[in-house]
Length: 448
Image (cartoon, rainbow, N blue to C red; front, side):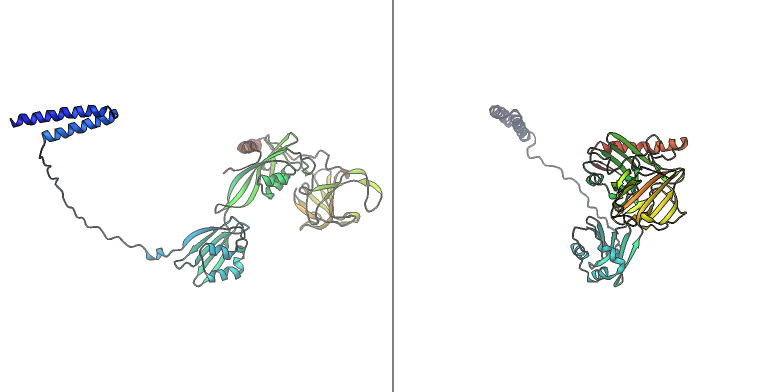
């Protein structure tokens, strides 16, 4: 009888649970109703099947293992210098730099202020890093920084004093590509493209035989260049050679790639292996200005008469370097009447060039000495018949003066067939880099 009552009660509870679930399902979501039904059925089943049941105890075991005592490290290593880096900010002094790094070391500041070997530290360049090491007492233990010429200055504590030395750091050479568009001048466009001055002058040298950079440039002309950048400790310290260059001048595209010439000197050739450099430069000075051209009739400012002007006058500040426009031997280096201090170079064939009104001669400029194209042979002055600082330049063929700005200049010897194949393999990736950077009017890209 008791069993039957329990069974009836269970069935009622089961039925009641189902009715309750149906009522709830009218007002709640299907998922919620199913959850309630499951809970009702589970509760009834637990009550009807396993009342007053108990769980068996889970056996446990206590395990104790001894651990080895850790070995203490070298206590001295804990006192090793702590290195950190500070970046030079505009207006920084060595005092403000040390203070910003949290150093209050009067002895270190006194040494850096007075020792001649530490003087390069006062040539602080904004953005340049300075590595500092402090000891356990917070005093300066060591200092490292790059000097303006790319060496590494090292200052180290030695007992109660300090010692400074310079180290020659081997640079890491990487390639950098840049491009720009001429708006007013080459230097203006180069500055806008972030091009260093040395590279801009190198670009002018590469195409100096084909482009007069004072008269021939037009707005919209474009250039691209791949050049070397030297890095030490991850910081740029200078530029190297121009490896490849392209210049679009008045719709004409010129390209040049660096290659070691048969005579062992570096020279530039175009993408087909022809020499892109003329045997003579158009101008004996970098980016100079012509004040008086080659003419058969010019009023002489000193003689006050009309006479032929058989050369070209370039205006430049006193002391501007004057370059040899081609390889040759010095025939004259002295003083001649109206020319003042003058140099005459004799070149291969029947060519000679003359450089007059110099203020002084470069070291080694004497008759019989050999010079190469681009070598400095003297400096602009106003000696002889000159009313102001300038260079008078003459270009002669068989001792007959010719206009150096209009005459077709002879080219250098082209590459041999064997050298041409190696050159083209070298130039191909550089040509691709020029094309990539030229696609952006003003871009600067680190190649590798």
